[in-house]
Image: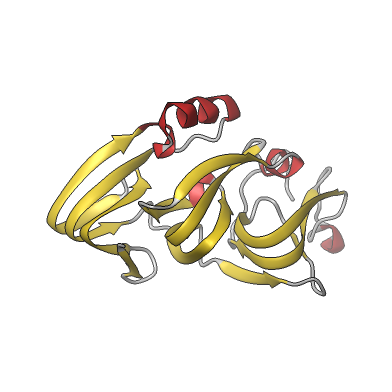
Length: 212
């Protein structure tokens, strides 16, 4: 299995000994040794995955990288977080996924109103299996723990990813800025309940709810 490590906070170094990884197309910045690169359609999920992503709008262009040596990945100087999966599932916005172990499975899943509110569509990307994944954020991500005793509410524009046994509820009418008298128009939050982790970035996307 390939070994993931961070070279600083904005570059991912992946050591491979004949292994393969999947990375965001065009994200390779350097490598040593012998590497082969192959663009993958539909996020590397075959024809069915390509069709599904076209229909859902959850576009993801990936490449397979295989070889001997170390390959370095980065994208627009984004901050990078490493996520270890042990047979569980990571839910992540496709634009925030940088790289995964070749043995991990990717797909799409319905997010309902959460995706619509965040402006990212009604579907999101899933990464499942055992291995590592690297996700990106605009600024240093905050990893927040959710427990049955302590649910969490997140601005959909700042949401990146989550993992664990979590349920999502969609809330409207209240935002963090409402309490400061700065809210404008209708706004939304995502409420997470259960047991797991939520990754949040200190920068907000534009959302269909306006300035939230």
